[in-house]
Length: 330
Image (cartoon, rainbow, N blue to C red):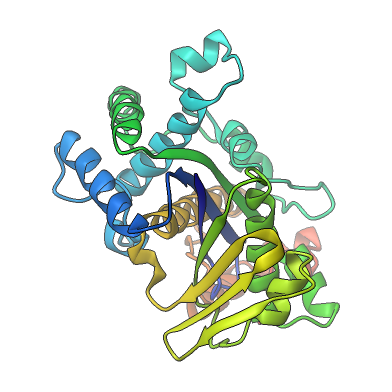
């Protein structure tokens, strides 16, 4: 068997809200034509659900501002249900009744392995933890979809092992900037740490890691060696479109590719990161509009983030909110 890991992020550009990095890990009989096999599987599940689109695809295709979270929520929660139903650990009666679908933000955070130390969690985080899940999709449709996933994956010889997520809130992000890292370094560090953790789920098997490119970075060999604790990293290719490396001692091959979201493991990571980021921003806006009625919500991107900060100036000053706990510096 081969472990195949896909990674992606959401929130790299905004100043408000978290940077979210996600990854999905899959087991297949081998890596040969894995992308095609996974694409056929995702399309079959989509068709079984009555959709012309695959269940897992690039989040930019499935979600547009104002269109609602339904499409990406179905894919993310069905994936989490699949990992729960495939688990060898005994399921509680509550897990069985819910098909392993999280019921609130706290359960979602736990299922994705999100660690939020009190020291770096923002003021709106309790609202995120209390938010009811699902946000847009119906529980009944999700359970039916989870059953389809649980049936179709094994028929293709595929197992979805895990879906995981890491959040960097402004306090933690800015601290990394102060340590000497730049924005691209932070993304690469967080991504490779998460990929290395998931790689440890199948230490005796070869692994392939697929990542989208990180900003304009072209060379990743030193970063790969550091985060996989590898004394030797072989550079296979470094072009404008793709950078690929091999870690012989760990039986790992890792690729950074432009347009990586076209491949299902990266697509699911993309969807998960986007979903968590959108739920986090919903909690952010609910928190601040409760404190300051009339304050218009924001998605956190630079131009509108500056507008929001100007409109929120009075409440921020009144509460003496330190800038670094709210505003991610570039």
